[in-house]
Image 1 (cartoon, helix red, strand yellow):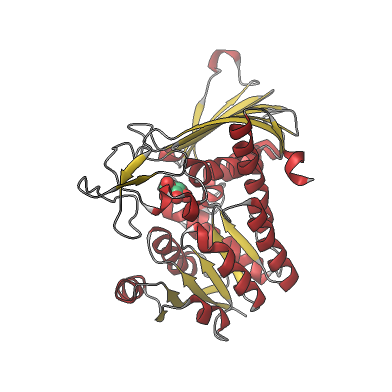
Image 2 (tube, protein in one colour):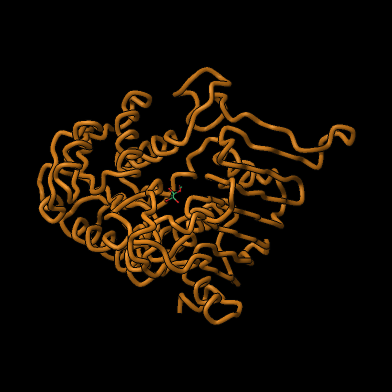
Length: 388
Ligand code: SOE
C-alpha cells in the first residue's frame, strides 16, 4: 500500500488543518507513503460540499457509518467533536480501518480505554492528534532531555493560555458543553500540556488541582459554531457545564515537580502554549507563539556568558527542516500537522504503531481524570488510583 486512502469525519477547524497536511505531505516529503484524500464526511450536506471542493477531497458523504464500511478507504480520520470519537473509532477499527483521532481521545477514561482495546483487538494502527510534539523546536527539546544534556530534571512548568471566551456574551458553543466536549480548558488545552509533559519528562505519579467556571451562563449558540462565534445577547441563557480554567500541580515518576495552567480567560493571550524545563545541567523554554525558537541555558557555559540563548530550530540539524526551506526561513502551526501526518504515514509503511497512539491518549485521559477527581474531592490523587 503506497497510497493510504483517507476517509475524514469533520470539516471545520481541524478538518481544514488535517486536509492541508494531507496535501502538503507528498509535496514536501515525496518519499513517504501518500495520503489520498478520498472521502470527507459531515452532517450538513451544503457546508460539506463547500469544504470538499475547497480542501480538495474526491467525494463527500453525510453518514459516517457508511463511510467506515467502505472498501476503498484504509484509514478513518476523526476530527468531529469529542462526544462522537468513541462510536466512530470503535466502528472503524471493527471494520478493519486504521484510525487517526483528534484529542482528547474521549469524554472519559473508561471510553478511551474501550477505544484502545477495540483498536488493539482489531489489529489496526491508531494515532491521536497531539500535534505540538511535531514542532522542530519541541523535537529539539526532547533530544536535549533524552541525551541527558539538561541533567536530572527538577521542574516542568507549563501554561496554555487563551482568551476567546472572556466576553460573557460569547455563546454557549459545543466546547462549553460537558456532554459534547467532556471538559473545558482542561481537556482542550490541558490535554496538550499533559501530553507534552509525558513526552518530555515521563509519567505522572500524583496530581492536585483546582478549577473554576467564571461565567456560568451564556446565550445559546447557533449550532456547531466555533472559536470565532459571536454572541446574541437576546437569546436565552443556558448553563456552562465545563471549566473555564483548570490549574494543577504534579509529581512525576522521575521525581520532577510540575505545574500546569490551562485557561480561556487569560486576556491578551491568544494561543500561549508554553513550557519550561529545568534540569541539573541546564534549562529550556518554549512558547508556541514563537514556535521556531527554543531558549536554552547550560550550566557549563563560560561563567561570563551564562544565560538563556535563543536557538532558531530551522537548520537541517533540526527535525523535518531539511524538507522545507533554507535555514532561517521559519515554519508555522500548520506544519505541526504535516509532520504528524508524515509520522502516521511512516508508521503505516513500517507496519508499526504510530506515536502518539491511543495508548498515549489513554495515559493523558488518566491524568485529566485524576485532576478532575482531585478538584472534586479537594485532595492529592495518585495516578495509581485510576489504574487499579
Ligand atoms: C481551541 O482552544 C484550540 O483550537 C484547541 O482545540 C486546540 O487543540 C489547540 O491546539 C488550540 O486551541
